[in-house]
Image (cartoon, rainbow, N blue to C red; front, top):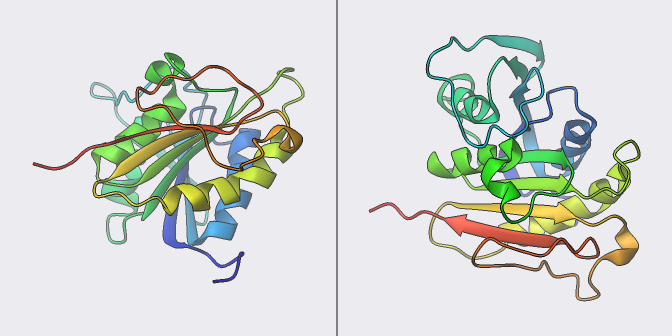
Length: 211
């Protein structure tokens, strides 16, 4: 298989920073290498800290912003549900990618993150899902080039992991490519907790089996 050959048929992209966020633009470039078809369904405005909440008491408004590109006045969870159950219902996504978040999501932060919440929503809908985040030391100078360089290979490795149930994983990219672990393998924690080591690509995962 060629290193640049797509590995999934159809990918759904979302985030919690908003549809115009630079991290989502980076993720679109990454997804173009991995999927034959890329869809973007993301919040119209910043939805950080909304976890995997969905809107129950207010209408969801969707605006078309291009081919296979939609903005939603709602949470990241709303975006995944809207995509999987409405916009893409005839051909559902084979993978959900959420991010790339501005800042690391580790430990307790994953409980509140809208980026991770979108991936958790994908999991609950039976869709393999990955949340991606980029570490930074200067909020105004995020090293998006690091995420752009590392994310395709990391996603390929994560999707190659054998599992017998829908799976969601969250991955945080280090400050620079030079600081990646020599082994090139992601660190993991079964308890979903990890130290904030900016010199490693850190992943943790969860899965749900149907009864």
